[in-house]
Image 1 (tube, rainbow, N blue to C red):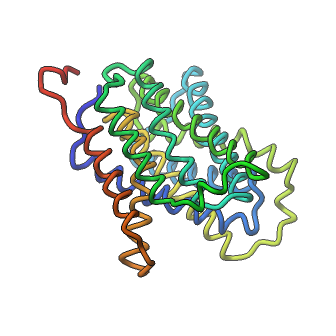
Image 2 (image 1 turned 45 degrees about the horizontal axis):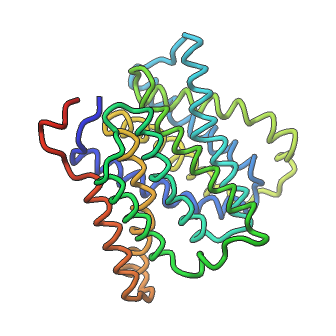
Length: 300
């Protein structure tokens, strides 16, 4: 059952913004040593290990029913293996700003899919206006350099990120359609299956035991596994279960806005007036898309 976002839901969304926002930087550092498949394998294994310890500490157990393990496989393919691998490959050829702009397509795809497959997530004019305003704001924030770089030799990498955004959108919707289950158990099971599925490919193709390991990329990859994969996946399942996929997808607008604010306030980066217009568009889009409907129309 979906309910209007509460303060705790916004707080969890903010934690996801931090975890996933830093994932691009951590991935870039990890790729200095680890090839893409190995990087994804490590982050999944670390995330699964952390969540398994927390799950057992809280007294939960992994389900024995085979159908749940099939669901875990679908979740990890859509939400981990496919997008993680595509984005890791793409980041070897395109800038993070361009990747961030393309990731802003997730709310648009999620909105369309949720309209058809999730109850009470209808595609309304208010929601469309809000989502499109947010996307326009991200476009303005990212700037002309990212827009100018589309096409040409970078097109395969850009299409890889677009495919990753669609995979995320499908995963957002599929997660909400799952039977009731602890978000911690679901997150743990999906990461375990993901690590088991990709491990043979990384060992056979990239032979990671031959890599010259250095401390910086190794620590970055472990942090990627603990925070941006393990704990973030747990919070993801809780947020989608509580507030629905459309609310969760707003993270792809909030992350660029936070990056802009952090750069301006903490690092003293130069800003232009049109960037403030982009930030205003993002905030307006989120406010419009999440504005509560009259009580009579909020039947759940």
